[in-house]
Image 1: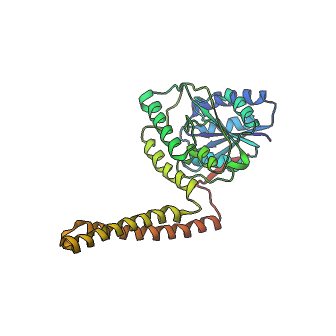
Image 2 (image 1 turned 120 degrees about the vertical axis):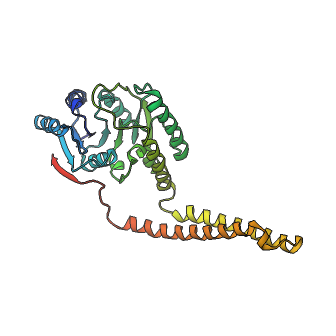
Image 3 (image 1 turned 180 degrees about the vertical axis):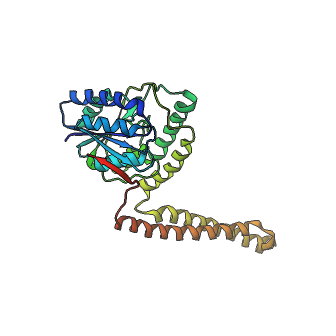
Length: 312
């Protein structure tokens, strides 16, 4: 099978039949073996009934239902785990991503790219509520990770399955997949895709997700550069703080012996003590992180979701 299309679904009842029709028309035109994996992320609006009807009629459609809402990252992770295609496409269920762009993504991937990311250059969302925060977030993410993309938040992407299956996703990490794969040496391309206004249902994202993105960005940076060597991060800062502490202590002694200023009258001495304590704590934290990383690599990994039902 060449193509697996993963569709995370959460309360999108009105959009599912239209989406399935558009996906089927586009994928049939490719003349390639494909499957569509709908991941019902604990929907409560009757989406599961629509999905069961779709799966019943389409032998190439699959359904995985969660016991509750675990989030889009877990839904995509389940799709990755249960996919069998050479290439894996992720697409939103809200009809704002255009299934008609999938052939263009696939063609770019066939040119030798491991990740092809969609760029919603002309977004049909509220500017101040979504578009502007997204522009700022993409600028920050690109700067910190070193993987420059215009639109990390666009779900419409295609991946080479053998690479993406090696990752385990948690939190809101799905938006950082290009960066995580880029750290592994993946070839990444970005192409402009169509973006459509939402015609039914409600958006599941707001300005509050910005804070989650910022927190997850620290995790991505750590996993990309320091996961295999955390002592370099924590130990490096620890040594730096201890060095500064030593300089302040020497300045304190110099003032005492050459200027007659008692230690108790020098706040620098208290700062030196504080920095030395923090420095040693950072070193110990680095050692503990080294131990935890080894446990992480040596023990089995477990999924971040629980499945209620499969129709495969």
